[in-house]
Amino acid sequence: EMTTAEKLEQAELLKTKGANLFKKSAYQRALKCYKRVVDLLANETFDAEEDAKRQKDMTVASHNNSAMCYLKLQDYILAKSEANSVLEKDQGNTKALFRRGQALKGLCEYEEAEKSFKELIFMESENKAAHHELAQCRAKI
Image (cartoon, rainbow, N blue to C red; front, side, top):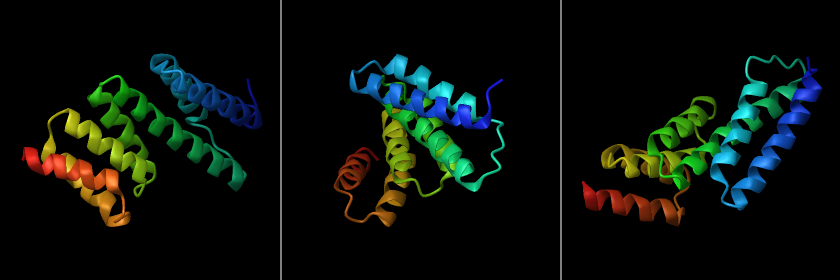
C-alpha cells in the first residue's frame, strides 16, 4: 500500500506521461494515464492542506485533459462528462466550460453549447475562441 506522498508522486508522473502521450496524438494511451491519476487520488484524504490542493488540482487537470482527448477522438458524450466532472469541483474552470461547449456542439446541442460559451465569455470577455464558437452555435439555432 502506497503512502499518500507516494500516491501524489505517482499521480504527478502519470499526469506528465499522459501529457507527453497527448503531444504524440496517442489519445487512448493518454486517457489511461489520466484515468489512473483520478483513480489513484480518489477516496484519499490528505491531511496537509498543500497535499489536498495538489490532489484537487491534479484530479481537475486529469478530467480536463481527458475531455480534450475525447474531443480529439470525437467522443463528445465522454468529453462532456469529463468537462462536467471538472465543473463539479471547479465551477469557474474556463477550459472545462470551453470543452463542454465544444462537446455539446459536437452533439448538435447548440442551445446548451451556447450557454457554456456565454458563461465563459462572462468570465473572459476577450476570449476570441469562445466568441467564435458562440457565433457558430447561434448560426445553427
